[in-house]
Image (cartoon, rainbow, N blue to C red; front, side, top):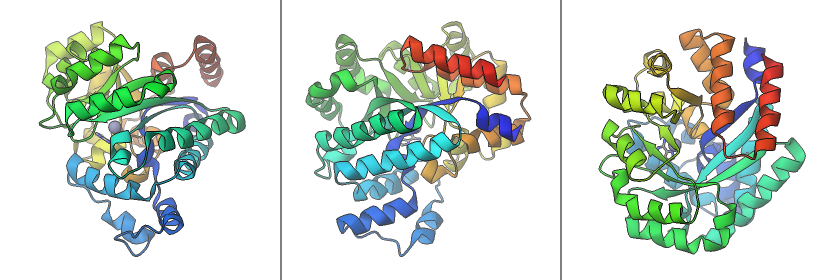
Length: 331
Ligand SMILES: Nc1ncnc2[nH]cnc12
Ligand SMILES: [Zn+2]
């Protein structure tokens, strides 16, 4: 089974590229850029990754990215992840990135786009990996700032596969970003949003009704609202679920308590993802393995999850058919 999970062509639809920053790279970039970290060594960094909830994680996540300063840093960050993902049988990566967290530190959008862009081209050439870019708005910052970012990103609109909504969820409902997402819609940019991770089911409804999103990131709290579950099923809305993330951020206590089996039983379209692999104890393969151990799923279930991810990915039809063919060969 382990060999099968590794061979399975896995498309990752929910990943924060800044959340792939392993402590080793954090230290090497800190040295390169003369940034002082509040840790003595990588063991101390890892020991600090004991989170009570989403906000307590985000504090360290934003602090960690302070070592990212140049285009080369963003390139190295992304390539480091792409190589790891490739070794785990990941064939497609959609990366959220958080420009506001970089702009606030004086790092220009052009720097981020140049570094990530170079890495994407290299990953495609060297690893045969396809990638997509999801520019995320920080929901705990003002909506007006998000709108300014969207306008500032005009030279890159063509490069964006989608815009997203992330960061601290509670108290920052999707409705706050209605105009920003409407502007993205007018520009023809697809939309996704984190909702129902820590926030209530109502946030999932808002994301669908007001932001017109095509996927929900996390969405696990939909189970508290049976009518919403019915709607998600009937409309075939894909949830990008992140099991190990949910455990580490205490959305659930143990992986065995994760609602994934109930979400599947409800007939929902799900995908498995790593979210912030450097912080949550594992990449795509670890997430697949954790589910295998906890739920003893059949190969068919994993194929179904992998197929949903390929179906819902922001890729051209030629690439989609190629990945579906790979999946068929793996059965
Ligand atoms: N799991 C998560 N939820 C919301 N925002 C995030 N930013 C990075 N990881 C996140
Ligand atoms: Zn996320």
